[in-house]
Length: 430
Ligand code: EPU
Image (cartoon, rainbow, N blue to C red):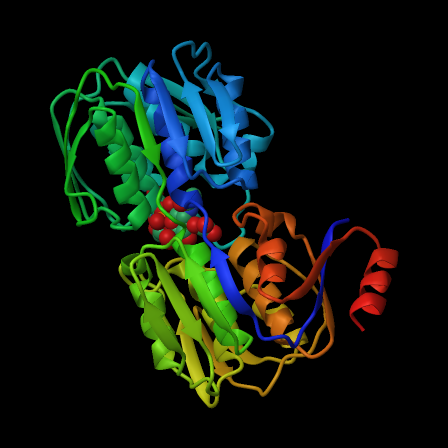
């Protein structure tokens, strides 16, 4: 079984290049099925979730040609199946983006419902409500979500919660519906804006993405496009917090600093220095970390996908900090692992009360999900002694070459397959 073997204690220092945003790439790839013409995508991250989605798209007849590790040419002119039901697709949340895309173009689709509830219950009622408002009949049967419509007709939809997934799905279907759709209380995340820009580059008419009211005039046909995906806000934020936790000095390159404002604000608050330039940010952690309070919120608030990373940092700060998770109900599972590394954290409902300790100590731990997994690796990089991290398949879902990027910053981390390889790693790094 693959594990990360880590020896902590080195401050991470140097430059790291951020890849394309996974959560923008997933809907953009799905939306590429909405035209018969060829679409060129650049800055696509080479991570597991993307590769699973591309595999499922090939399964329904999409021609996918990888022109380099980070770019692909896709043609959906010969889609021969509107039922998406591969084994892999059930494991990724974003499988349901194919529903909005195929429903928009073909007025019907069936997609295996995403399984796994690793960070709390993830409802899809708002997706269904949106599709129904556009005139689709939606049912869930035998693990499949099925949508079909004679005609899709624009509508006025008020989202009961700010949902990235529902906003994206309804936006895709509405882009090819007849007439005008208004989505109120829409999600404002950068990946929602990136998808709207991509759809517009294919001839859609979408205005207001990035605000809480999106206005869409449906068009009958979309055309080919060449598009470059935005940098990954959460990968960037993870390395920014890696600097804070390891008392390092990291320049995070190829980012949009505006997307990182809530992360930067918290790093400044806990005593890090942050320098911004056009497309990079440098984080220096020269002073002891200070305590703070943070609540996760939809964009532009502090992202839930950065909650474990900030908790790991606050676990090493002076005094008592409070972290409140307001998006997902079960996103503190990793705290037990952190406690095994010496953290002093108490979780009450959706709040973590953190009394900072001087240091973590290495332990044998498991990644419970993607972001928590990355956060635990960072904790291990600051810890005294050796750590092994299991279940790194979660981390590989969303971070490309994570351990290699960390090695390039001076981390002592290796991928090992066996206990013997771990022992060899220990001997080598002393
Ligand atoms: N919600 C509903 N009904 C719905 C949809 C959502 O009640 O129909 C609730 C959810 O239960 C949750 C809240 O609304 O409490 C927000 O969920 P949202 O729909 O915004 O999340 P998502 O689309 O399922 C995406 C990202 C997540 C990220 C969240 C929040 C993708 C593929 N996933 O999920 O990313 O945490 O938005 O920003 O874009 C990750 O990358 O590690 C990850 C989990």
